[in-house]
Length: 108
Image (cartoon, rainbow, N blue to C red; front, top):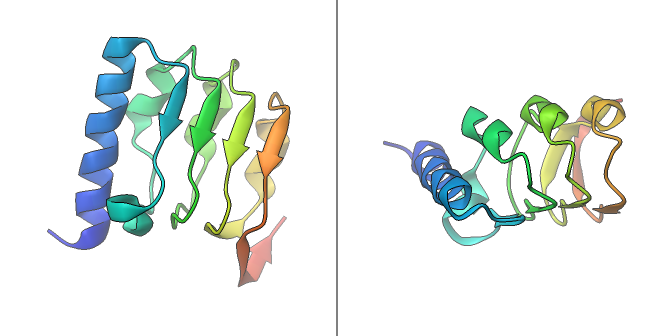
């Protein structure tokens, strides 16, 4: 299992635990999550999620966030993002931390 797969499995486990705890905040930043390239689809089940921290990750697709209507804060500080077109579909947030590294091939 490579680092990205390990990060994905760790994120999946953390999302499952967050769902069981009915949490409003999820932090998937730093440490093992530095290699995280994909959000697990289980995150869509966190209907009460308001704060999502994804700083220092390498997530490429944010489509799974579309269903999170309670989401108000997204932290993408130092995240490696190449496609920002998803922002239009997740416009229910109030606060976005955006000092990030944008790859050479940004799509918007």
